[in-house]
Amino acid sequence: MQTAQSTPIDFLPILFQVIVAMGFVVVTLFATHFLGPRRKTSDKLETFEAGVKVVGNARQPFSIKYFVVAILFVLFDIEVIFMYPWAVNFRALKMDGMIEMFIFMGTLLLGFIYVIKKKALDWN
Image (cartoon, rainbow, N blue to C red; front, top):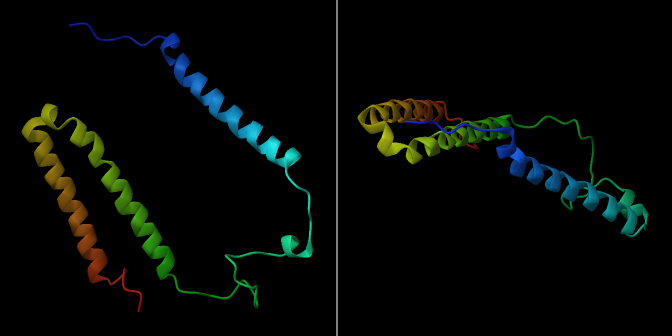
């Protein structure tokens, strides 16, 4: 059984796609900068935050729950991403792959139960 060997020429389409994508970004940035309108009004130069008028100091403390929920979302989202390669190779992994995925899902479930017990997702 022969294995497929990669040569540098096989990566040429990927390199071409990266060059085209970067070129598109650079051309778009320069085009909007040079072709766009140049109206600088006091309203446009003001600090803008989602349509809310600026009031007070930006350095006021707020709840850490926002960051905890964001970090937990990223953590569980990345764990779900690890399931995709397993699903693609499900038949090739056979019973060993199934057992390993049950261990992985059990660990994920234990982490989720821990988060629920600590009430990290409660907003009150």
